[in-house]
View 1 (spheres, rainbow, N blue to C red):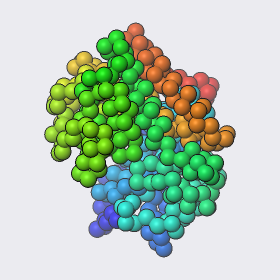
View 2 (cartoon, one colour):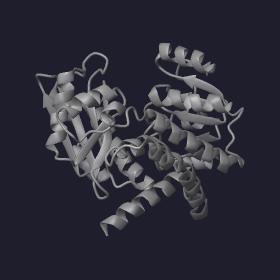
View 3 (cartoon, rainbow, N blue to C red):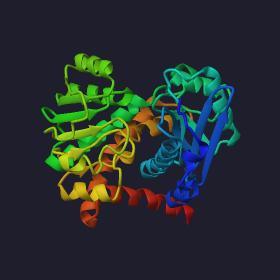
View 4 (cartoon, one colour):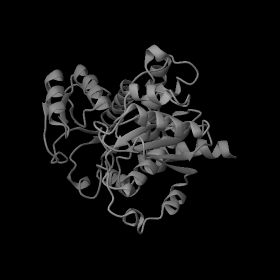
Length: 362
């Protein structure tokens, strides 16, 4: 569990309201329960299009500031993800501060469910990094404002497979735009992070015949996935200058930053991680200048949101997959729009998402 020597050390020179104003958030809820050890933050970014739906991430953050920044950035991304995909949802996210392998208990999940319920449906939760469908079952014992519950309970289960399918569609659309064909056979693709989503992306890619290289901080998982899908593994952090066709970041965000961007030798970036660009404007422009085609993350990783959204009106797996398949066409639309208007693909995607939100507000 995260420890802070002095409460003042965690908030010194850090203005939460200023940051909320900068990113245009509606609400930030801090949750604390001594009995269960729960320390959580719920961020509601924008509810113009509907209730804020977004997963809960459990992570052992280095400091509280990191947790606040993460939940603010992630919740904004959910707003954009819902808008660009055409869903009647707003954007929200939650983080629970702690080690998911040792700190998590059923009582903690139920207490978190109580906090979610207290928001009266303004925020609907789901699973994210460090959380499982079983955790959602425990959350649901205290609130109906939860998705991602097991299929046998009427939900859609783990949404990671649909997220992976959407990223795969976005990757194929990127190949189509860049090389004239969506065929990924023999393309060298680096998948960074082979957790629930990353592993399923590896499955799609190896089945198509791509030459996949995988990287993960979890060595045992790296070995398992490498053997299971007969792909090359690469340990350590020195991966950014690998000579590959496609770089697919599928772990945590901000891997495209001042330290890594000039090392890149890929032609396409298309992955599942949220907030891949540390500075979405500066680094998007740099990638464009380098001739690297960037598939905006909040566009191509929207499959999981599509999947959990479908639970609200009665889950239908086929409908969720069919809607996720449309990510292919939307990605091509974004690339064309960026070229026509001489803007980055990130700007084009933001423009489309914000247009829908502003239209609803007006």
